[in-house]
Image 1 (spheres, rainbow, N blue to C red):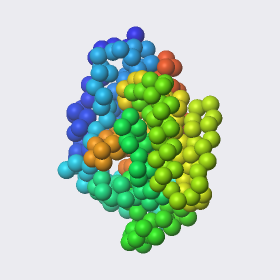
Image 2: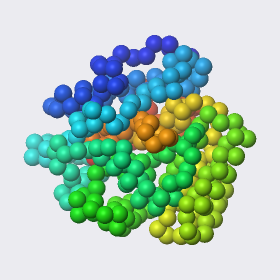
Image 3: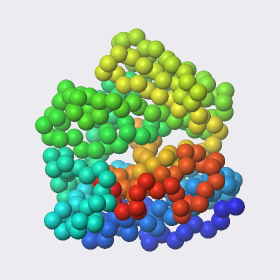
Image 4: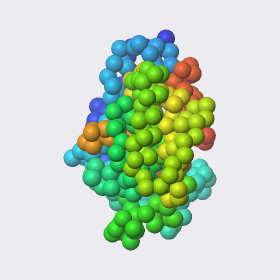
Length: 302
């Protein structure tokens, strides 16, 4: 049974952005470790004790993204000249010089408006008519739309479309997750999503149902939209957020167009750091939060 006491954090969660900004010389692994343990304890609670009082807050372990602190979310670029051979060997997917972002440059777009513009172009406006109640977008469609676009492609929607479909992420889908619904309500919600996507597009759509998802397909360049039906159960939003495999899985709630939150893990991802952790795929799996499945040693892996 999970404890009712959360691990101590060096600062309240809402102060994480400024905490990282005030410690530019401290490795991100070290800065994020207490927050990782904090989330691990919540994962354990979701798995073993879903009625725990710690889980009553619908926004537990998520924080507002676009605030006055947003300008402090900046890139922490590697200093290749000062790295030892041992440290370099820990980076299993090093970036090439051409795509490496400058140190201290913005790690994400600076406003919800910029994100919505990017997301609409990324998804070819297929979700423009969507009712976002009980729905979240998560995964690569969110993080790709949050990342700053190079100036040469950011001058027009035509340039953005070329960037997303030809240069950056041509194969990504849009993943949607449902929460807080009964099985019957989830079925009706999926039907509503399908109808709204069909009405938003000028081309024909085809809907494919598999064991764990309903995928709405259309002509290129419209991306497939997957509604993950496996998680469409009557539990609060944080339960879905604990279900991702990777520690940096992003999530953004864009209901009503002005309520935006992200998981703590996305901050490290956007700063070009990742702990290299892989958690069990479902919060119903009981596991030790201090010993997740490791892809690599707990060092920066970018």
